[in-house]
Amino acid sequence: MVLVLSSELGARTAFAQGADAATAEALFEQGKQLLRAGNAAAACPKLAESQRIDPSTGTLLALAMCHEADGKLASAWAEFIAVEARARNEGRLDREQAAHTRARALKPRLSTLEIRVPGEVAALPGLEVRRDGAVQGSGAWNVVVPIDGGEHVIEVSAPGKVAWRGAASVKPEADAAVLLVPRLTAKPASPTQTAPADAKRWGGLEWTGVGLAGAGVVGLGIGGYFLGSALSKNSDSSKDCSGNVCGPEGAEARRAAVSDGNRATAFAIAGGVLLAGGATFFIVGRLRAGRSESAQPAATSLGLSVGPAGFSAQCTTHF
Image 1 (cartoon, rainbow, N blue to C red):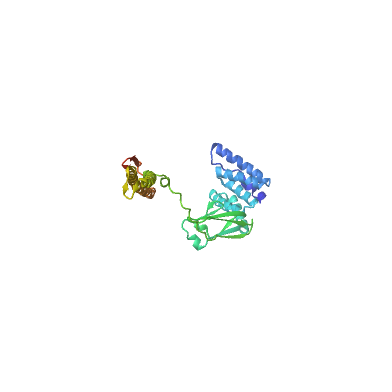
Image 2 (cartoon, rainbow, N blue to C red):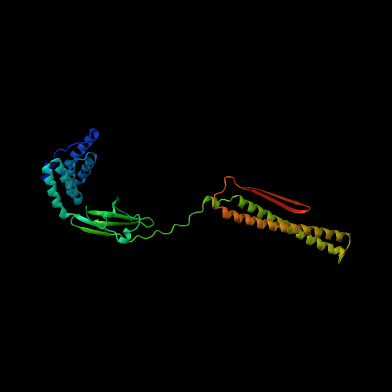
């Protein structure tokens, strides 16, 4: 075949200018030499690059011959058909007839591939089918098409579905390969998204709650101290008292016990209120944590005082 058509290659008509034309011509000449030497595998890339830089009928004819020699019959067949049409428009009857003859001779030898896409898969919104990385439109699904021999990778994807990847092994000549696309499975549910930073960060309400609860624990502790003191002094008064009649020391001990008891009660009540209030503030703050906080963070001030009259606490929060 190479000897028969070598006379048709001749010189190529250059359309590119300058360095591009020179590069294309050099690649064309190198490709022809390699093809005549029987090294189609090395010749085809050079001819293909020459055609990309500066397309011409002569280069395309050489590329078709090269692909045929390299066993890529479907590519060669398509290129011979293109050469036939171009040569007809250019008035090159010799090239037209040669390309027509080669295309007819190749057609019965072509291998084919059919990518079968079942209806339920084809109906998926956004379905994309790729063959060797190139997107295949829906018009190419379930259609027998000529293809070069070798292994061809088919990739199928759709929104919300697990992508599928398969391979079709096609023989170099007269093979009829079929690849069936399976039903796509749904993607697993996404794991719970991590809470936003604002939901994790403590804001003014949470810190206020912690402060109040801490003050409440202190108040309960002080109340417990005064309760213990009251009980101890009441016990001491029994040494100088008989019923409700007490001597000077007993009377003083009982007055001190009553005073400490009152303080214990005051601290216990205040501590309980502060602890409950702190818990409330903290819970409310957590519930609001998912929302955007205001530009000005909450400002909280907490005042505690302990004196002879008992325990007092003052909490002020500005939002």
